[in-house]
Amino acid sequence: MPSALEGSQAIARTVALCRPQVVAAYPITPQTHIVENIARLVADGELECEYVSVESEFSAASVALGAAAAGSRAYTASASQGILLMTEVLYNIAGLRIPMVMTCANRAVSAPLSIWNDHQDSMSVRDAGWIQLYCADNQEAIDTTIQAYRIAERTELPVMVCVDGFSLTHTLEPLELPSQEQVDSFLPPYQFRRALDPSQPISMGTLVSPDFYPEARHSHHQALINAADEIVAADQDWAAVCGRPSGGLLRTEGSEDAEIGILTLGSIMGTLLDAHEQHPDQGRVKLIQLRCFRPFPFEAIKAACRGLKHLVVLERALSPGSGGIVSHEVQAALSSLEQAPRIHSFAVGLGGRDVPLELYQSVLDAIAQGGDGGFRVFDADLSKLPPEDR
Image (cartoon, rainbow, N blue to C red; front, side, top):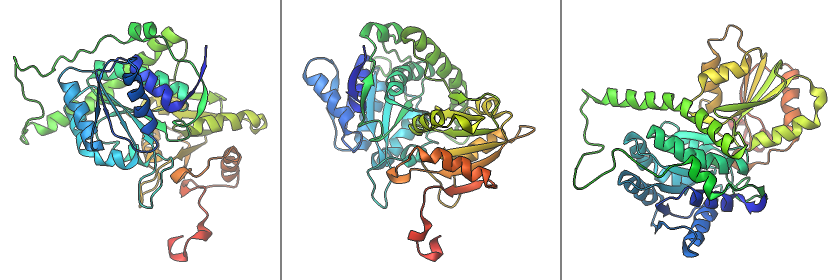
């Protein structure tokens, strides 16, 4: 039966069901409730693990790295500036091919200071070599966290589960937590074939000369590409256990013969679905939720967008001086299509700006008025800026 849970509380309980042996914790809004709830589970005797309160996010990532390398299932969580502070370690974790899971409670990056949601933090480390999965709602966050451990441990790659700060982490809603038996049947005990052992010492992450560094990077890249199959398989196998598919690499809703597509990541998908249901007269529109950003699902994107005349990419981040981050990769994926859709790239909801239901109609109106593609911050009021910055 569903129980009313805050998103962070549900994520914490889900992590506990995955039987982590080491949890490294450092608080930062809006991630704090996750590690607070894990601490409570440990204190109440509901979770047996080594809970390490550290002095910074850099240390949190470092403790998790060491624990997983030594043969323990590990977990940590962070957001915003915390993700930036642990960036060096995130690259090390991925480059060492250490399987672990962390939650990124997505939050804007300073300056100016913002504690509210966008995707600038996880997008800033998209090239660190982690698998990145984005969740549309808290039920998906529960299921994705469980899948993430199996994906990480089968591919020997770390997985970042991205959930929108406040929009999901602090939202109370009815959620279905799986039983311990269900999780145990899906997720076997942690085994790392290269685990550090004093009786059989090995070196990890040692100095590599130019004679071998390119091969190491190619191997890492290929492992991420190959991980796509494991992401799909994990979703299918977990759906067989709990009856809830999350969508694999991406999922689509709406008309299959659509002329207009709207692609997004994270909780905006829920807003679009609600608005889509309220506007059945809009005709042929397809909604595309990009669930997996790394590895980037080129073939799945092409299949989902084939036949579209226009594709709107809504993203909660931007690359200053360039524009949309996700839309550039989508454009690259679709470049080989014989008739690729015109791409309209919009950044929305930056710094936690509200994304209302009316956005759906506004986007469709912009296309109907003859928009010629390109990039813009869709909900920005440029009259607030001096003329030279407009």
